[in-house]
Length: 117
Length: 117
View 1 (cartoon, each protein chain N blue to C red):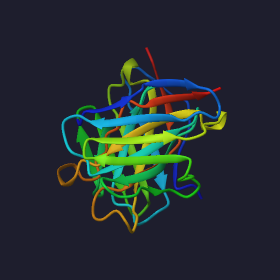
View 2 (cartoon, rainbow over the protein chains, first blue to last red; view 1 turned 90 degrees about the vertical axis):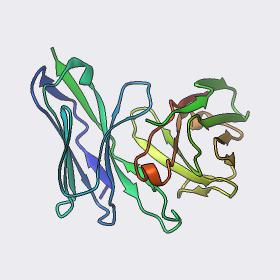
View 3 (tube, each protein chain N blue to C red; view 1 turned 135 degrees about the vertical axis):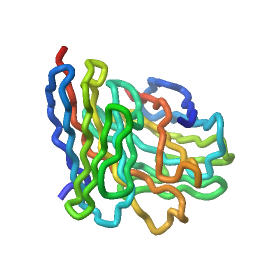
View 4 (spheres, chains in turn purple, red; view 1 turned 60 degrees about the vertical axis):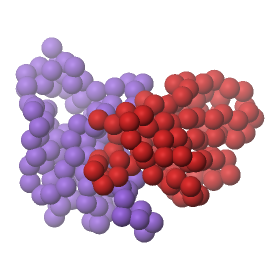
């Protein structure tokens, strides 16, 4: 089983609709979960971080976490053409030597989202 | 978000040469730096974790003698690809640990695209 799995898409959503992106992870020890947006040729841009079960909202974005099901999702409301990008789900990669600081991240392959005008 | 710069933004080199990539944190001090690479159409993969003043820790499958990481100061980390080959062509991205204030919330540098001929 892959550590972080996402549907590669493309996922096509009409402008103004809700885009729903899903991600599952395999390591139950993981505690930190992130959604990044990546435009072609650019480095990832942090959209949302979530650490507790439930929903977390930030503007048009809502992240949902269910640790029991090992499932993370991202909802984008009122989708805009500028939201067209690849969305990467990332999970912290706990190690014995992190020394209490941040862990490196394990990424999914990303979902290519297309917002149709 | 945190300001991180990378230099160069892109580089083309001949097979067998070495290439140095610099990553600078401009507005904070980073005791830990993560280095990732991304092959075309693939997701980001953690290569190594470096701590200021100590040896880097490499992920499984990453050759430490080929990818030399130096983290001599809190604002500068370098990745040197030694004896580069075409299969090393990739997008290399650094990501600093923001420390307690930003634990587990990771930002990325703009990346360096390496092409080895």
